[in-house]
Length: 185
Ligand SMILES: [Zn+2]
Image (cartoon, rainbow, N blue to C red; front, side):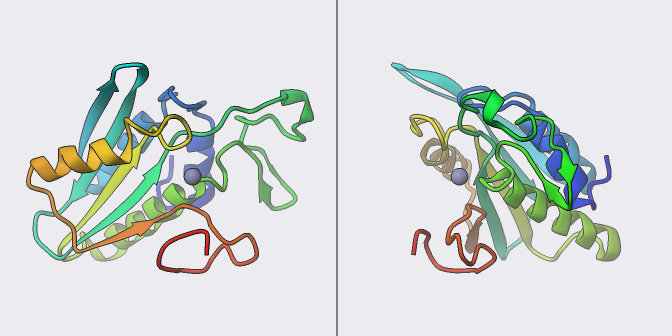
């Protein structure tokens, strides 16, 4: 897989059926994408009585500051009635310039864009000054108790801290490419 091609990266991620709480291969695919770029990848499984165990991923490139963190989730909501789909939900078909699949927007697309941008940067200019990390949970669309909160706590206890965070979650439907502080505004 070419990690500098956003469509290829997104297709690989969509083809992993990571319906919460299943990892579905999505984090393993992400790990395989970023390790060659120099990221140190750690997998962390979070547990809580009464909820399914969840696999999460933390990856860091570099050891110095400033430190930019990209936060996101690799899980997706269930497909519902598959017969209602114009393209199979995990096929990642490209038709008429559109890529179809569960999680294409929310939010494997965001992960693919971030990874691709980094891959291009590393390829063209080498690793960035400072550090970049990926904090990717598998529990955003489900109970959301074994995801971001526990992963942040786990990373903080290891001594991680961040100067800025970019969340790849889609937001405004009329201006999805807009950067903003917070979401749902
Ligand atoms: Zn989302």
